[in-house]
Image 1 (cartoon, rainbow, N blue to C red):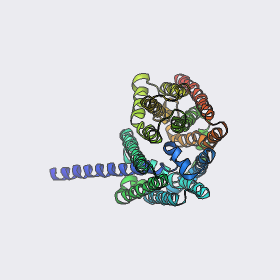
Image 2: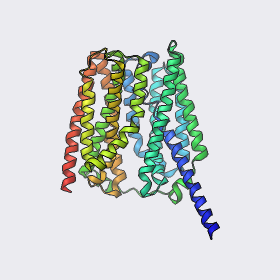
Image 3: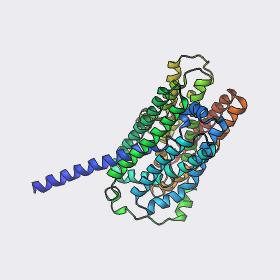
Image 4: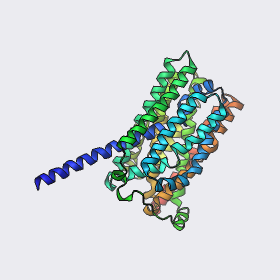
Length: 423
């Protein structure tokens, strides 16, 4: 009896370790997958110089990517439910690696670059997104969900920081030779995507992750899906997501603004931008969750605070003068990143507070994601056009636009508080 109990405990411990390793491999893969399509968030100036494109052309890549992602969401979910998840994840990671290597060789051919950004939506979005989200959910029981997503988010941040700092290091090492540095940085993305694919190939076990659910899918209930559109909380969540995506896009232009207007070096701006884009999630997410649960006991109130802080953070850059010490600029940029992630980390946590039923939670998140990411379809091209037409004055327009959308989110979060109280 004792031997059997010991065997069961040992087997349980082994299974936990395997699940943790799978979770880490998923976090690493996710972190590597989106550095290429969102590369301009950190390496804006380097991409403009190496690719010899203008601001509007560079911004149009995100529009292409966002449109393709939007189109691919629903068929991607169908694919993820009908094929083995390991197959989907391997196709995505190795496919993304190939795209990195193609981009490294064809980055001056803008037609090819647009095709690469289009295909990035099918390696990093499409079936990869639902497959990896479902995998994380099923790795732990109901009491472990926060821990599972927390570890995943942490590994995601570590992976994103790793690849970005490697790229910054290569660009800095070959600072006198932009082309060599740029090609080396892009190639490093491809190598790391290959490594993440190998980790999934070795560690991922369909049966261990999906158990009996593997290969099975629930029937699609069109009536329940359509009823989800009638829930006010879904639209509140969608608008809050819309606001975060807008703030994130506006913040990506703080990097070229810091070099072109405020006068800090491109390497310093890229380093700070990397910390803001990827490292600040370690602080912002947990801080936002703690404020929502322990201080306000309301996610909507925390969302109000987070968006107000984003308004202040972006607004400061409208008034600080050129020549401001790099340390101060760095601190302000990092604060904007922390404020952003206090908003992002709790956006989908408003569901229970706003009375969104559990049985339509997936549909609610899908609708909010589709609406929330609409800004990526037009905003980057619009911002690039403003910079090409108005020069540095275009940044003022960008920041004021971001502040206006964020003010709307503050109002919507306040409405969310009222909806919650009525419940």
